[in-house]
Image (cartoon, rainbow, N blue to C red; front, side, top):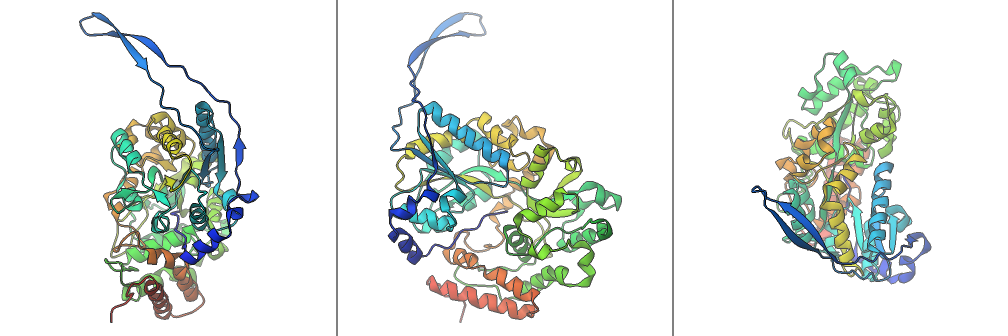
Length: 495
């Protein structure tokens, strides 16, 4: 699901930076160096024959000019997100290695986990920048809010403009996610599939057309109807445990019921409302009332992000919400469930029914990096050719999707995958400017990012499941948010 910015306080930043270069160069953090041979290209003139309509042949000399040499300082250091998709991870790393060898660049490439060695990711990035040892390039789905607040990113508006010239405009959601102060701080790479996934045969057997179901309350009733726990078939495979999946579901429910966390200014907390009480009552009810037990798989409240993938692919869930990694992995593994899997645009609530969009992977440059021009050339390699874009799409089928408008048609792979094409309205929706969890306020509110990293909303849900009255849990959550807003110099609540 969508990634979440981690809180990076100035105290933590100074502590991390103060630890010295030892922290940054610790063995656990160092990527493997890939030695390459220098490839030397020779400029030469090539004679090309051009035939015109009048059949007069003109000989034209075209000079092939090599791109300016980029001198690498040390080695070119790239950080890569290790996604839930091994084939995609392997393809990207192999293509990066091939490209750098072709350029004659020595390459260091690390997965996020190897780089952080257990530290919070964004905190580690900020500490490295403060110590003057940042990576050259990051390919990830990380947000920009905290990194921009700490001034560790370099703008990449020039690269985004090249992508727009080549492929057309990026999705409204990508622009919302990666622009601040009139600049782009991350280059959109590909949209990450997200939404509902269901077994067609299970719903069809009950005469249910799931594509006509747009309210969560109706969806839950349908999932209950198709459940058959005696045969290990459960209708609703979605957790509300603290996880990306659980947080994403909670944000959709609150927004669907018209319950918001901040006001339009971003100065005031608005959690303590009748709408939030009603949203939390509905969401937790299905995990607490006896009526809904048949549709819930065992242990669902303890699930982590991979659990629903595993249970769905085993054919035991009629419906789940997840990124497209699950479906794409099924294709690449030859799972027999694939022909029966359908995509369902996520449902909404009684106040807000349709508000779908997709997050994306991006590429970022860090202030003070040693090889910014190499990083820019690498971005161009991955982003500006249809062959490179189809490489990521085909190695993550129906998960990695175009984030630029013309690429949906110009890709040679995407039009061949029906499930991928079914997600175009969601990926490019003009409603991408409506982001559940921050709407109607600013998308990049540092106080909101700090409160999110403290998992206050997760605590609210846990309190309700333990028996705390919903209104009391909502009020406590509101008060904790207000306290954090005040730490950021905001009023937090009206007098």
